[in-house]
Image (spheres, helix red, strand yellow):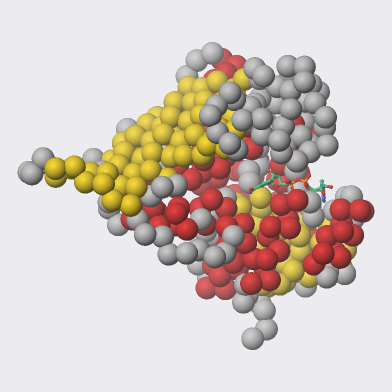
Length: 352
Ligand SMILES: NC(=O)c1ccc[n+]([C@@H]2O[C@H](COP(=O)([O-])OP(=O)(O)OC[C@H]3O[C@@H](n4cnc5c(N)ncnc54)[C@H](O)[C@@H]3O)[C@@H](O)[C@H]2O)c1
């Protein structure tokens, strides 16, 4: 069967490479072209994946009538202009997280999507892990009852990407909050059923990053981070319109006991609680006064989640189904993250 959707990738750096196995495995989509402002990055990528239509000008991809899906993998600050131009040119768009660093840009993306009738998906790959899919199915089946509180954290010890894409605000739009806060927050809100956030009290701080000799164990070419202008740490207390609450903590640099990163979530409902990524569920029978713990059996998910998100998008488009990660949900996420920055500045809780 011929593949239906032709994909053009804009930004052929590190993360775009994780999408390629997904497009290749999808029965509905194939990558036909790529664009990057770095000639070396682009030609290495073209050689790796056997793609010969390569251009330094993203407009060549956006305006190519053969292309149906634009896969945006540029630094965060370049997302919104590229996504909006692609929508206006009649393309569907998969865009890496965060969809954009500010709520205003996401509102503009939503307006462009509604006007063009084309779909947008944010690349929130953690939703496509086997553990998250299993947990979500159980929660949607009612295992927790009404969820009234959640805790989520993504804490790293000396682990930030020391490249301008991440630590220069002109490229990233923010630090740990925007980079990894977006992951655990998206996942937690999705599990909670995306209630509407109404207020945020939080802090966004740079406490360790500028210490002489500070270092990262992740990739990157900046030897030390003193010239970065983003936060390394953020936390928040969030209230939702249904009365639920959430506590969030994120850091790239924390004296925290973890070999690499500690990413976890707890959800508490009236009928039970649960934990991710363990998929443990806890509840109690009030008649017998017995406590119950059970852990879900995860059927092996062989597809790496970045690849799985590409497959899910092509599948949704082929079936006329809604976007698996719609921009309206990313707007909620970024409203909270933006609220953290505003709360830090105001030294007070912010109404959203
Ligand atoms: N989901 C995840 O796990 C994950 C992990 C890392 C990065 N990301 C996201 O992916 C995006 C890219 O991150 P990365 O790690 O691949 O960074 P990267 O620096 O490796 O790659 C970005 C590429 O975009 C190119 N570029 C910049 N402006 C461009 C433009 N206007 N047109 C075309 N190309 C342009 C750069 O030359 C570079 O090759 C970011 O939004 C980041 O938040 C997601």
